[in-house]
Length: 169
Image (cartoon, rainbow, N blue to C red; front, side, top):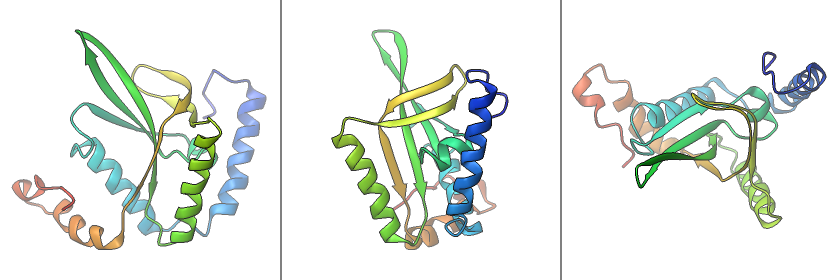
């Protein structure tokens, strides 16, 4: 993000160039269908409460998407003895049919965890925080086409009552 004041203009420019280079490498992987699936999942987590009513979700920057492979930041509100706190999770949203690529992504995450590293969101922005988040647990959410064929029609139904059942069975 060009307006992110936590980093120097040189760092911002270097990160923007890194993203453009990564976009070129990943251009074959992105499809309109994939973008639709990611939007659908994002919507279901944010508005339909797939991860519970104490969660919120925020999209990450292109840098964190392409470089850190974190598509969204999930914030879980936790109340303990009347004190409100939160826990964050880095979420990867995948709708690829490339199972080998998905296995490779999972393998990279497992390797990092074994080495003691968790996820990073360099350009995190939530309602109450702006900055870098480190040591985030990472979750990859993968949805297969058969499940989507079942769920998407219910999601797009014009009838409000029918839309209330937006769950994966």
